[in-house]
Image (cartoon, rainbow, N blue to C red; front, side, top):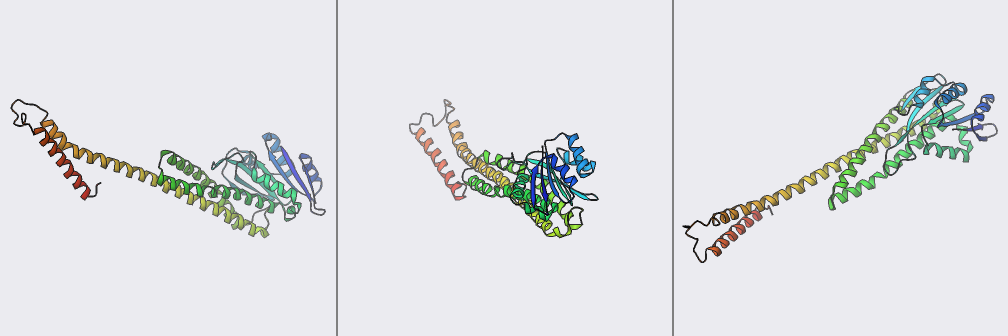
Length: 323
């Protein structure tokens, strides 16, 4: 699928279409275009990227990979930015990403996505509603798209804080293994969030540090804004990762404490019943010449001694605060 927005800065006219607009854009050097590619045969895409935009073959290959780390690569007249966008299919706090490639030139913005992108769809709708956004140039649109991508990261991350707080309270009041499993799942997802965001932070730090073809020097404030939001998202992912780790350790500590308490109770019960079992064993042998065998009160005396021993042990454990 190819969809395109062709913009004429002189008349502020916006035309919506497909591949036919790429040919019109080539014929009219006074126009700007945003071409969005998805679900196309790889060979056809390569030909279109080369024929219409003169993109580098290696950059095209990177854009078409199913998995590739985010990167920034500058060419003579354009820049290639590869981001990891959140998949529209991801639910709850599930980390699913798509490859989102951006090629930015003076007259064009080309996006190539491996699946449906809510960030791309959002910006596409905004441009349709306000074509004047094109007046700022393709580089500004590209940075706006990157800002939208990180905004979705932040939105997803911020939904986790109340969940972790709720799990912490539940862990103290009603601990169970399902809580531990959920925390481990969040920690795994946050590891992937951190990995992607570290790449993004480094990418925009590089963009801040040196001029990039296709991105005007006047865009430094937009670059700083995207960089700061990426850094904020990375910091939040790290914070929640550490919080999830602390909660996991806390749950394990509570489980160990409960186990120790149970073992202490069992040990106390065992300590009480050892002497009682000894007495019961001695007087259960029934030898013919046992002195107490024929005593009329022997049974009651033995029970009294056993009760006395149990009481003394209970008092001793209570004084030592073991009970």
